[in-house]
Length: 107
Image 1: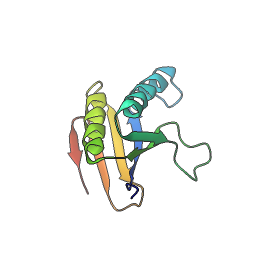
Image 2: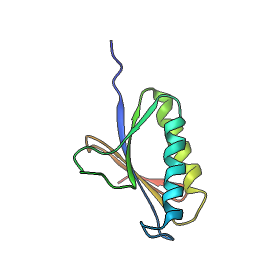
Image 3: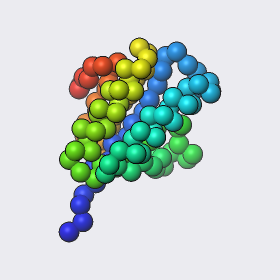
């Protein structure tokens, strides 16, 4: 039986950089590389958004521990600068979590 993957959309922002700033691009790539290297995760651009926003990727989680790993990676990345934000959304739209610095809130 094939394992069901949970897909989470990740959108990132940093109030200190414009979207076109090359330093911001490097910081996004560092986060996405860490997520790509995590066990049981796969990254892809969002579907149906043309080229997709550079700040958004979809993480497919292939094991229960992959969600915890993704959260820890995002928390560590947020901790690097005070104005970073990561928004996590389930693909089916049932839930939204938003991280601001080192806190998490759910609507």
